[in-house]
Image (tube, rainbow, N blue to C red; front, side, top):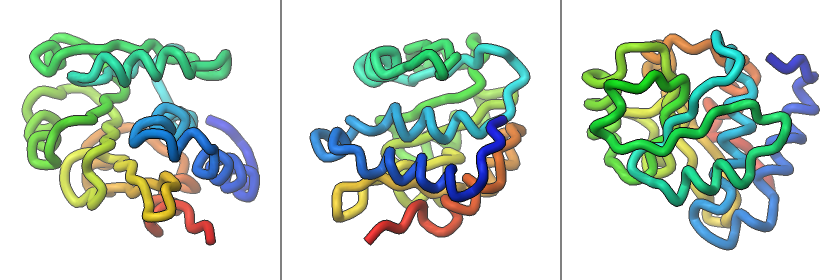
Length: 170
């Protein structure tokens, strides 16, 4: 887990949110934001498996935007394969919050962090919910109940950012 001071953490996430690629498409900044969030998780494995559910194009974005500091295995998979795969992080990009919650309750029987790109309210389903603000910047919210269920430890500094609706930049 990184031991950056809070101001460096905030600056890092702010730079990601202000990156010009974020305005090009709804998912352009998704991998960078997710990699930033995932870097503050405590993983039991040296190479955590990020499973991208039902979206091979997003999985390819994750692979193409991975740098040497991102030591993750990227696994594109279909929803039906989730029960047979051990994922440390699960990315949902085309399911409703209710569907996410049902999957997390019924198909995931191991510690796993869940992230959604289509669940902006973040009241149900995934732990981290990415959304695009009116000014086209990305931010995220945290569902604390889902975090408890996930059994994955996240640095509290990132949780505070999400608790307050993510980064505030004016």
